[in-house]
Image (cartoon, rainbow, N blue to C red; front, side, top):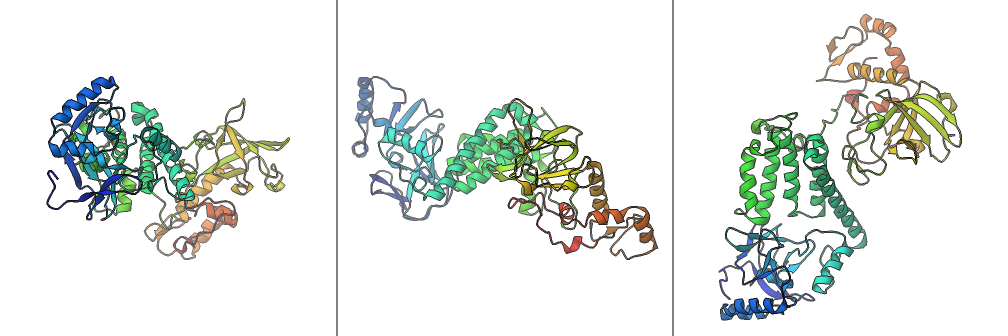
Length: 538
């Protein structure tokens, strides 16, 4: 065989039910260049007349060596009307031309391919690189499809062009795993479409939303299978958004990851590695730099010596989780949003959700009862943290009758976990409450509840092992009963605070890890054991 390496990585073998294919002879490490070859024949991807196409093919075949000609004739579907089934892109624009290759044209399809094909324009060669580590005996595969969609769509597209039913590892998954995979693929497409809709203005005005969307894509690609060749493009979207907002430190790191992805899938001499490798060194050369400087950083501003988890939190601009020993404040709008910032019932709001049906965090709506009435169901008018009035309609099983009359009072505060805006017909969005266990009414006004939160944050939190006296405001590791505390207990109101906090749910609101979502919660809230945070001075 022409140009056979002394220590080949693969061999041509019969593949049951799939003709011939390439099988790994040894372990192939991720990023390894599996093959690099020039085209045997080049054909247009448009549809010229059959006679013209035949003449072009005959002319090119006549110039081949005997070995090359025999290899070409051994391919399936070499007749002019379906020869393109063996062709691979031979242009930076796949719609221009395609080529037949001696070896690469024998690579079979998989919807979860382990190698990536690429046309390197400057050297006019087709290269294939390993997207992940490949063990000996595994077939080398590429993906014939542009976008990986649902199994039915994939199979229909492949059947139409190649007249065969795909039975790759992805298409052959058991029913439950297949449903999970399809949900991820659907979500990846949705995230990609959302990013496209945001456009350049979205990179500036909705930068955090775009960053969250790319973070979700990274997670989904990792869950779907390592080494997806589309991941660098997602990284590039995030990097451009960061550059547009002046954040060169994060942009440089994310560009590094994009370049590494392209290096794995396309090799070190592909256009993307060269172009974006240079941009990584100085992202300020990008045309979007300077449009906004609200996140201004320099390339060298990345944290040094931090843990991997902390670095990822920094990179994706995640909010800091509350530290052990600290009480949760009810002030952060990310956890306790105004009604206008609640997620829509049928939207995947990236500030609240990692993906469809998977919240990123817990959130909690606070609204003071302004008025209420019973018609077909309980209805309330509430005032939120912005002072805006929002209607609340009860669609629980009891239609609001389950509410204890003693707490159904104007001036008390309603607390709803996972509240969403619902678009009622012919009216402004409102809150539709359906699960009774996700609501609690606190016998305090909204301002009183927020003030209680502020006092708890000051006097019941532990900072560097120290507590603060509620009377004299001095800090110390031990807060023993003294005259100072006794005066404060009687005159500064902590007695009333402690009485309110005998309600275990109200107390737990301030200790609950709202920014760490593992599963949905409801009232009564699960109890949080925090010895370091208990026993604060009263």
